[in-house]
Image (cartoon, rainbow over all chains, first blue to last red; front, side):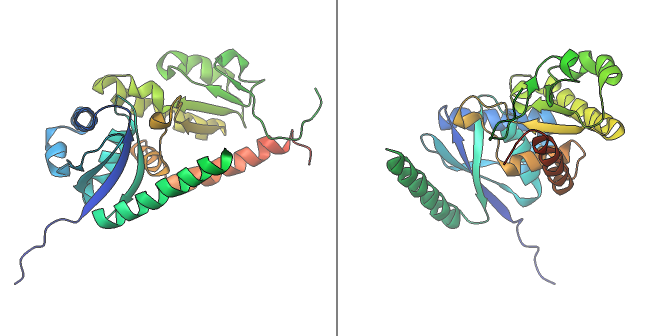
Length: 109
Length: 132
């Protein structure tokens, strides 16, 4: 008999115009309002890399749909940038995206 | 009106303009339900904006999801196209593709099918006006 492995996780990078703590509270509040306290607990939502403008949140794989709906309907408004199964890969992709955006801005003038 | 060389859609936020506009923004489906049922025509586009639901409290946001589901059923019956847009006015209020897919699933729609139908509708609408 093998022990049940822990649930897989998803890391979501979110762009927000408010402080990271406020963004996390807004997502949690919306998730709870829409799906209830049990769903909020099951989602095990956590801000793993809170930052200025962009933060990385973690949630359970089974709850990713609910978390994405909560992010889309959260107030103050915030936008999902990317999602990955590991924070390392997400950060790598995020850096590439930021570089591309900076280059595009430079070429525009 | 002369045809132009770029794609465009005529958008209105008045249900009364549904016959003239390509896309009609539905602000409050609860109030507009009866009017819509009477006026809706095949091929018309009905738009709902996520920004409307953002400003609502939890109960109203859940009701908004249920209303989008009802509007989708109406669109299926009337053979018109439902469009869900962000209604964004700033980069942080945009809605990503994954979030839209999750919202569509929550509203009882199959995302892949929805995007395919939307693509077909857009091509047919834009094809009427644009000259190459």
